[in-house]
Length: 286
Image (cartoon, rainbow, N blue to C red; front, side, top):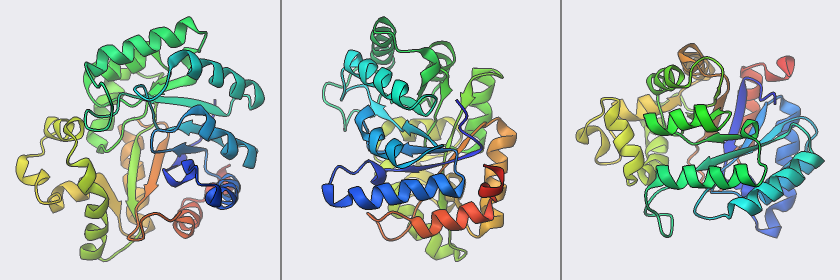
C-alpha cells in the first residue's frame, strides 16, 4: 500500500450530516488531484465513513485515524474491512486506537484491550498488513511493530518520531501526525494553535507522553507554553512547514500526516490544502 510522502488528517471529512456530503466528495476529489498520498479521517470513524471518500477518489489511500476500539465490534470491523478492500484494492488502511478514558465508555487497561481487539481481528481474517495503531508509549509502539503494519502517532514531536522508529525498527510504517498553522504572525499563529491544543491538554494519555519527552507542568498549563506550542505545531510560511516535515522524515517518518489548524473551526481548510500541495510540489511527485 503506497501512502506517498504526505497525507491530510481531518475530522470534517468523516461528517455524517447529509448536508455536508457534497462538499466532502468535492474536497476528497480535490485532495486526490492535488497529489496527497492519503486522507486520514478523524473523530473515531468506522470503516463505513471511508466509503464516500473512496468513491469520490481514484488513487489516494483512505485511512481511519483512528477507529476507537471501544466504539466498534472487531468481527464487524473485519467484515467491513474485507468488503472495502475488495472493492477498492490497496486503498483502505485501518487505523486503530485505544482513545481516552474521558471519551470511551468502559475504558480499562487500554493495552490489554488493544491486544484483545487485534486477536479478534486476526480470528476474523483481518490482515496485519492492513492496519496501523495509534501508538505513543513504548509498549503500544512495540505492538504496532509486532501485530500491525506500523504506527500512526498523534500530537507528537520529531523527537518522538525518532524514538518510535528506534522501537519499530526499519521496516514498519511510521506515519506521524503533524499540526500546521499557515500564519507567519507569531502571536496569532500561537493563539490559533492553542485553540486546537486546549482539548488535548485535558487528556492524560497525551500529557503523560509529553512529560516523557521533557515537557513540564509549566509547559502544559494555561493552554500550553510557547515552547510546547512551537514543538507540536509547525507554524509560519512554507519554508517553516517544509523544515518541520523534513525533521520528521530525518527522524524516521515514512509518511507525514498534516492536520491544518485554522481559527475558523468546523470548516474544511481547502484553501490551505491547496497552498500546502503547491508549496510541497505534490502534484509533480504523485
